[in-house]
Amino acid sequence: MIRVSLDASNDGSVKLSASGHSGLAESGSDILCAAVSALVQTAYLAVKDIGAEVKMFRDEKNARFEFTVLKDDAHAHDVDVIIRAALVGLKDLSSGYPHNIKLEV
Image (cartoon, rainbow, N blue to C red):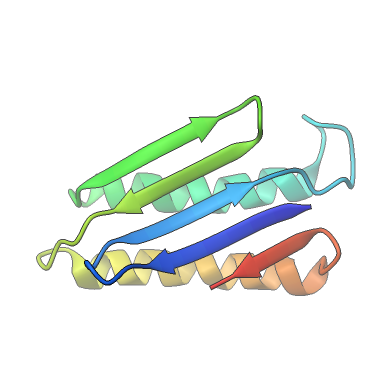
């Protein structure tokens, strides 16, 4: 199962994390895993591209990717839009594959 979580902390930072495999196909051939990876990694790249301060962690061996956007009032609106857009896609995938993706917001 893929586990995706979004956590907003009291200090204003936001963390988006995805880990695991969906189990629909072999690792490397699973379109559901690819879809989740594309959404989460594109959100990371977009946040980085607008100039927000972001920290990233990737563990390919354990199929884990996460990033944390540090509090940034100057980019807060844009970060919110990017994260919301990723969540729209992730929620859609989760509703279509409820036994393969667990989304926690």
